[in-house]
Length: 271
Image (cartoon, rainbow, N blue to C red; front, side, top):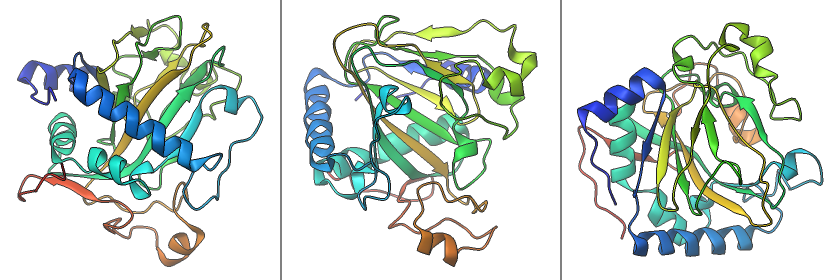
């Protein structure tokens, strides 16, 4: 795993809100990721979450991507991949925080001829607000403009608020909330399989349509800075968890949001 970060890469991320790491995984590692993601997604069936609260529906959103969330929680192989201090250390270095917890992982599989992913922000959906939230996006297939690569509006994380839109059929709806971004040029991020990108939870991003007869597979993980607090939104939390939390409570339950890296602690890798 190419997990080293230069000062230039960290500066680029902090200025632009995203960073691409080409050749992130070795050929062998890529095959392991593909195998485990494939097994975990197949085992879930139509259940987005392991407890079955969310299921795949036949609608526009389902044709944007198939989404399977927190595969680390019910698949041993995915747990070994996601609970990796190297990933946490990279995320913490880019975000400039002391510690990193998993908020949720998710497989994002855009189907053949799949719909585009509308411009959106990530962090406003989640149960915590943080300008330092960060995600990794690992390409399991070659990702191109033809099959739905990511696009970013550089620097938008600096002026974003927590206004957001749903990922629906109005691809530019986010620009109604942020009209001052409408003149920015989007950056397309094409990647070979095994490469990855990181992006800030408040940077504007989307993805094109899949104009091919093949799936476009990606494995992602959203990270929460250690010390984040509950904002009152349910997101992936169970009704029982929402009932137990008060706004402002620390989200520090390792069974829900594992701490995978902290600068002051040592970790034993699970491989």
